[in-house]
Length: 214
Image (cartoon, rainbow, N blue to C red; front, side, top):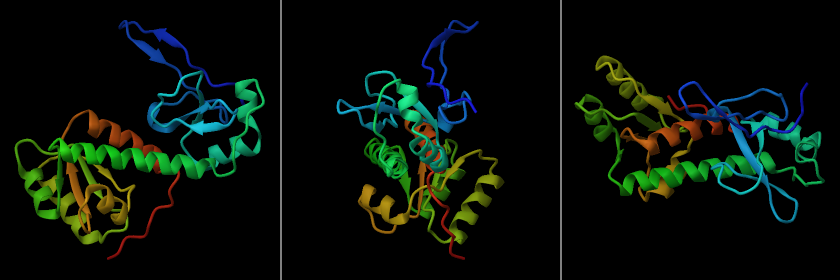
């Protein structure tokens, strides 16, 4: 197993684009953005999740799963990667989960204020049948399966290729969007949709799937 420090280097590709290589300190694998989370060291020497990858300093990267983060804490791999004594708290995976969920909910709020988010079964269904269908379907992970099934059937019938996100609870969606009982939503194509998809894929590694109601 390779537990060397994460790599943050820019390489020029043949297309002239800069590619950042991110290596998990647990597995040693280079991973895509949707499969990895950045961590940083705060001024007190404590490891903090940097899910938006914006904090200063050299980042430390770990695969986006609860098991990988827990192992990095247990085996003291953050200190090895930082080449310094740093402290990673046992609740680090929970903090990653919370920050990813908060970032997703914040983006959904931004999308709603920008007029890019549709709420409710009927509105989402009409959007799927329109000439400019949404890029993302957001389904409360604890919602009933019947409505979700009907929307996916409609998407298939109209030949729509949409990403389905089921990472957030009804209560979380309702609170963030200021509406009661938010179960179905749809997001128009754009940067917010792309970021939501990325974060949803990472959040899935930290959340146990809920059983859907029939």
